[in-house]
Image (cartoon, rainbow, N blue to C red; front, side):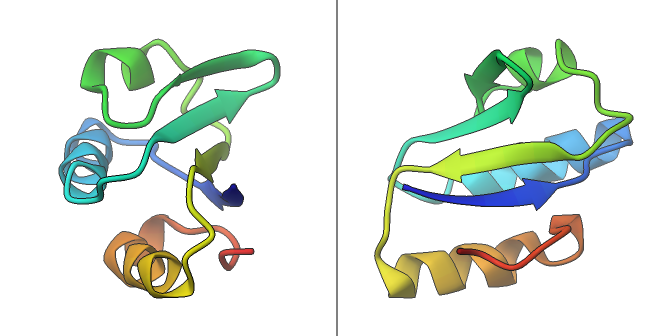
Length: 82
């Protein structure tokens, strides 16, 4: 598993983020405190407090996939993939 921090303050950010995440075959979860939702679910993401950065956990350690994800997420990233 790998994790990054993302920021999705606007409704359009959530829509674009879900479209990006839907292109990747691995599972992904957004986490805030002890609460987590499917990162490919618009409805789930709207239940989160998006005023703060969110932890994105992805179920892959494949470097090629992580690089592609980092490039696709671009400005939504708050820190590099690790």
